[in-house]
Image (cartoon, rainbow, N blue to C red; front, side):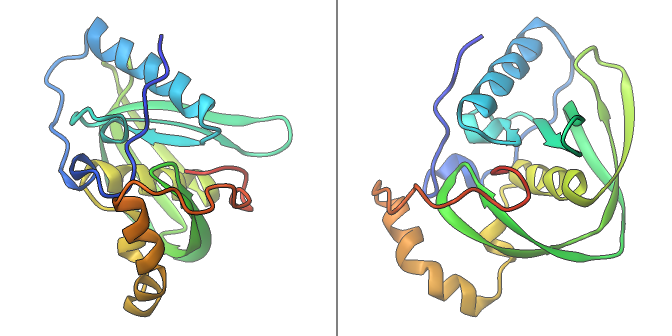
Length: 183
């Protein structure tokens, strides 16, 4: 296992759609192990493969449910096939350090995917787990959470985003998202 560098806003790989995986093997499982280690090293609760420069449809999440329980998943080729309700919640992103804002997402989702053994899985999620899954699937499609903000909010953030794209790190020490970590 290894901690991989997280790609930062402006890196073209973040805007590319990840490719489906045709077979789950030890290489994919090693990627998942690296992604978990990277996510924890960066104090995140979710990570998509393209955030570490790999254009494959893989994501990991480790979301707190309460003080004692966490939801941990590694999903290969995830597809959100049902979305219900909506809610607004604060999001941040390991690839956009120091930027946090409210994003409207489905309150509940159903995700179908393969697990790290290659077995089909179905997850019905609500709240923070649903938000994290939607955020990471967006990454796999080349969509960033700032793309889901209003034009006015994106214009307000333009200076910070442009600085990140130039390789500058403006105030990356902002407080973590109120919901328990950076997606």
